[in-house]
Image (cartoon, rainbow, N blue to C red):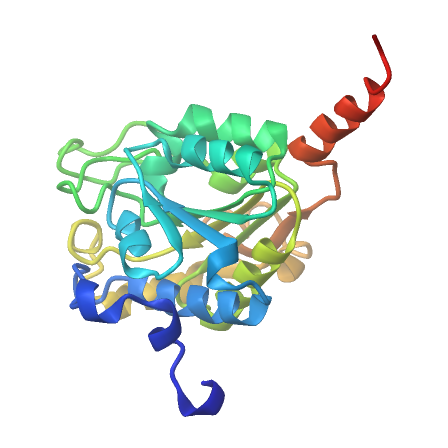
Length: 276
């Protein structure tokens, strides 16, 4: 809070877009606060940042945040981000998606953005369900969980977003829960600061469409679940696979240096200089 002024007045379109549309107890408000604090510490100005979102509860963040923003079609946030980054490589491009937005209809774009190692920060808010559109099963819904489209229990194994990103070639992969606010803020800052395709998964709570269906009756119970099931990457290294079976690994999971897509294109152009 520099000079006694809260950062929300610098980074949010408060007068036109509030009150917000999120349900009481939703994790997105906590995430947004951590995100704005991380941006404030990053050294980037608002004009240097492009914030892109897709469809879903998390997609509304781009309408509240006062950056250069795009609220895009479902699953296509990374395609818009790719075009912007290749056209204006000097801009810091940040994409915020939900779990369904990123890994269902947007799954193909996700893996190809990772393999290209585009210089984009991709943040996936994972609440294990389609929250805004009625509570349908998503690629992150755990086995046996009942949703509006899996009334007898989900029979499809969920993706591990971080393993998917790592296998596809993302340079930096990390995970936090909404409960671990300070860690979440630090990891957002690291992801923004790094080059390459950086993926940050945020485990968040949806009390209305998910929690009540799995026996977690309040946002507090859902946060307690996050606390009880999270284990840091450092601690996980000393645990057996059996002990880690129902745990969520949090922290920086992958941290590699690799040429970005733009750097490889520039090197290619350089190699053709003087060739007739």
